Amino acid sequence: MKMLEVCNVSASLGGFRALDGVSLHVNRGELLGLIGTNGAGKSTLFSAITGYVPLESGAILFDGHDISGLAVYRRVRRGLARTFQVPREFSQLSVLHNMMAAAPDLSGERLLNLFLSPRRVAREEERAAERAHELLAFLNLARVANEPAGMLSGGQKKLLELGRLLMLEPRCILLDEPFAGVNPVLIGELSDRIQELNEKGMTVLIIEHNLEELARIVARMYVMDRGRVIAEGAPRDVLAQESVREAYMGGVI
Image 1: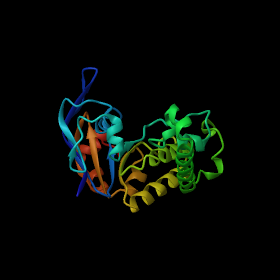
Image 2: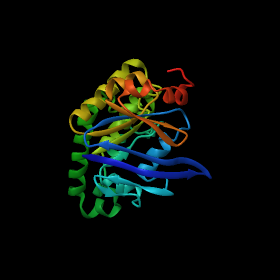
Image 3: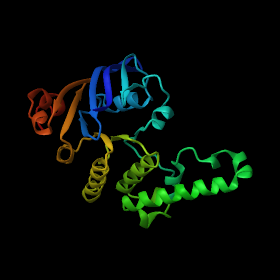
């Protein structure tokens, strides 16, 4: 069954047609890859799926429902969330507090509740802290929970970004270049965590330029070029196609 469907979507940025009739789907519980050169439209597609870029035509279906007109936060509440190429942590806050800041709908976010419902606020914050600690342990970040997030390595920041995403309790996650700028050891750790999430039922779509690592963990991938999908299938088959070789790396991949 399809979890996410992109149906003939087109969108422009500053007058430039960034997406031109894109269609693809992600099955429920699938770990899917999306590749293409810089400027192919991959990140713009993520932004269109999650509501940051308006559609000119086409539709986005999530779990069988058209979400094309929903605001970003409403898509998140339905269980669809994304990361960005560059982590956006609160550098001065601790890793733990970065995690807790991502917890949705806490009563303490409303000033009046701090005075009228202090026990409720405390209980919710305690539950959020417990969940944050669980996720930090899962991501092997427990040892730096009290360190400022700005002090983390690039790979650790990517892990933290994934953790903040998981605090939203999504059902489908879109990861934009999770391995970019990460050392090989942490690439392996990130990859393992992503696969574990998928094995537990999480639907995952990944944009990535590290073709070797991506091909190792996904069974199916799409290729984009100049705002269009030009290929789809098993990684080995897709990367062997002459059109993909020409579009992606000028014939050398």
